Length: 467
Image (tube, rainbow, N blue to C red; front, side, top):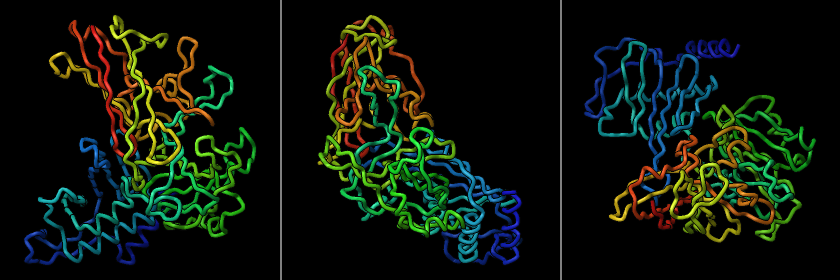
């Protein structure tokens, strides 16, 4: 049915001469433009967009690569966001918008010579002819529908073009069981908590369609007034969950949009924060906040801090301790390990004056020999997206929770201590083996750990080990 509706819309558009069934090329004198040899009609088959972003000024080596292919016949978008699949089905009306934009540009100026411009859009026609466009205004409009934003998206509060305090990040460890040593309920936070001084208005961050206005966690706690959400599916294929909305403040306009499917713009009021009655032990204030989840179509949570305008933060993380444990996580090892080991760090990060300690976002290990030659390197998981849609999955693999009857990581209302097993996962979130001592010749080595926060501030600490 969805496909038939899509075809009907396209046929209607073609009848109104809005499709790209034809365009005429006129000779131009500008050497930066190309024209085909004839004026036969063409049909666009697909759009291809590649883009690389460097989100951190302080980490030039960190890159985010996106590749997106839009099939105009069925509206499918195959998109990779580094190692994360963020593919989606584009709404027919949004496909038509893109077609109109391309029609306007091609009819006005034709294809362009983008050989000296790395930022371009590739169009493929039904006869396999290729057309390149590198018009900045067009690219910005197409990217809004086709790509995941990187450090450019608005925040959900006024002012939207400024950052706000964040109480928890995606990777935050949480465990609210009162019984010591009980980690059955431990989980990754999976989104971010944006904290406000009062019950402020919550603003939509990205154009999209409202898909849910209701309570959540109903199976656990019933229709609890603190757990009410508004959900928006954005025009670029992501799902935004705004948790902790006051049910009684959601405007009728948002309910109407849920029924009609109309697109709501950035800045549209979704409702107000619910009054959060529990004071926060770290700030000594009420913790009025939005819990923001951003997901792909497989319900994998994407790190919202990577998408939004960056916070103002020059405070690097603190690495409090570095130590080794055995591969089965039963004991700590000496600095002369004679069995396979994992590297654990105790670390935390503050965002300038914010009172909440959060975990580091990314850590890597370097082992140098006595001649300062690098002999081992391991990059731990960079939290672009969660490793699983289940927030409990892998939490006590990524973190050191319980070992030898002793509790390590904490994340509750009063205590936050983060012990990260840096060697447990690779940079793409795959579980990795422990480090084999037989890889190293006998001698002394320097083991260094570099940890970075959400804003590209990094710190490094070292210990000496021997084999």
